[in-house]
Amino acid sequence: GKYANIQAMPFVAITTSGEDDQTTLQIHGQAVEVSDPEEGNAVFEVLHSVRHKSRDFRLPISKLNAGTYAVFRIVVDDAVLTEYEATDQINGRATVSYRRS
Image 1 (cartoon, rainbow, N blue to C red):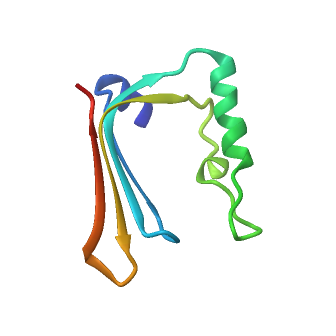
Image 2 (cartoon, helix red, strand yellow):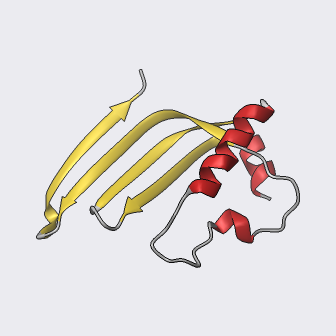
């Protein structure tokens, strides 16, 4: 499963987008398992506090019945945030990049 894959190869990439403000964030880094129970519980508290416009929205994690959950922190190697203009999504953009040295 995913857990075994991340343990064997901890280099990960995540891409997320914000539909309302036309942004994307791409992150590459190394996944490190969180071993502190308080830190792990804090993550789940944040996830459960997320609200969505839809009243019946549930985070994907709440739909899983896969046993014990693991929390990972990503040590970011590089990230790219791109904001697109609503009028021209191809040419009208501002990009900010970060690379850990």
